[in-house]
Length: 209
Image (cartoon, rainbow, N blue to C red; front, side, top):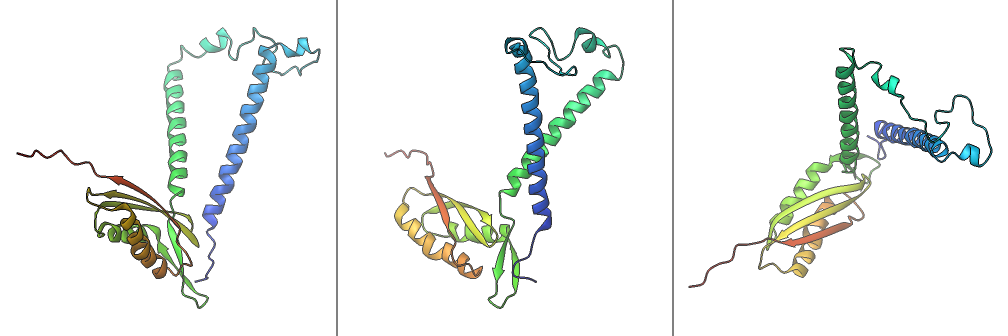
């Protein structure tokens, strides 16, 4: 296994995202320009002509005429097709959004053996080890770790829920010296930057008799 394997699918996904975003931007820009020019009647105010196929010729023009809007309403297939098309559009948009959010999380880490060979470690596995070791620390009730960045240079996002008796400064020092250092050394990384967020666990008030 090469020390620098290339993930072709991820590169293709980035290209597809950029192309789709560029096309959507051009389409929205063209539609906005058409509406703006027609709505403000700029072609007559500034004395310039528009192509015959220009969709909006003046402030009174509409995207769909009354006849166009009512053309297919009496057909039995019209409303099911419209509803299905809108539902499919929404589902595709949600799928794309969730795919972007999932890609922000690092799925694997490249472990370099130092001999020109490497292995891929699952990001979830390293996150689980980090979370377990952090939760075993004194004063930590819950821990959640997320890896981001590049697989050759991962970054950790750590969220700790601290008990009432925990000492934040000591907890951070222990996390850095133990859990993060162990993860960095086991993965053969030169460094493992981490962003740590602390919050206190709320407890019910105790009655004193």
